[in-house]
Image (tube, rainbow, N blue to C red):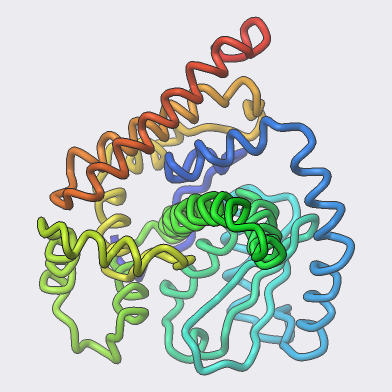
Length: 339
């Protein structure tokens, strides 16, 4: 497909659940959190009362809210993407002045999207469609809610500085949440691809994020960098682990290669044919076991496909943890909940 796709030729996804596009490791972590009744209301109450309202007021005061008379082209894109995902309520969209190529989704009860002006100036219509679709994917998955947990734990780590054992334990949880957060970006990338159904537009965004300033990068060579990054040297493995510990986003070549693999997968093609998880079938406790097993399979597949010796070990641990969680839930779940 190309960037010249007409809106009428794009597939729409009535009633699509975020589970349809979420990366398996993201979906498994979200499934555990969604199945714990107390987590969402508590975090919502704390975060929603303060940060969400304040952040939205800041955007109203310092950014341009997209609408029929302000950035009308973006407004049309915003509505087209919301229609593609069958959203009853369209997240608000703001453009703020910034030279950095970035965008973000804020808010829990009423998520809103913020695009930096550099994106709007630099990207064409299909690249922007991918970016907005990516951010709507975050909103649909409720990532803002669970990212709040990470933010609170980061604050708690500082408070526990006097307690070495406590700080070490919290650091381990934070490292795990950062790993999950990086997977949420892969989920957002998949949502962006579903919004535009144009893998090359998505790849052009990843090229720009990596440093392409306009047709200066060879795509095949760029994707080859991802293979080189995998490597087989344990020394590089340790360096990569240290470098990624506090990253919120996967590195650009890793994201690009991961999304292009998904674009070529049977899973993506099946969604385009209309076979996908739907919101009406979302039941957190019922879906939990399948989602955890899916995460375990993802770690196993990643392990088998990776040449990195340390990543093989980490993925083996991830598969074991997710597998154990699934078995435990099967034992304690109400009758029929895990089927």
